[in-house]
Image (cartoon, rainbow, N blue to C red; front, side):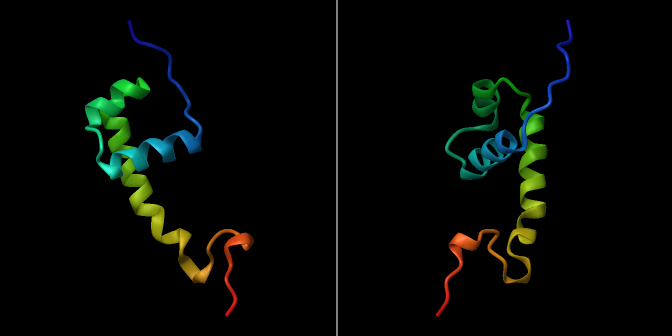
Length: 70
């Protein structure tokens, strides 16, 4: 029986994608740990890598607290 479609929050996706990039566990281990399909992790990891440069665009760090003035 097919389970209903789940909508994971962006923070969860980012955490799982970062865990996959870290490489401490295999995709199969992460998938089992988080109860998701390994292909989903691969998709989130690709999305993270694709959009990572946007975080550093225009010299913005994303947080006023982390700005350093010399």
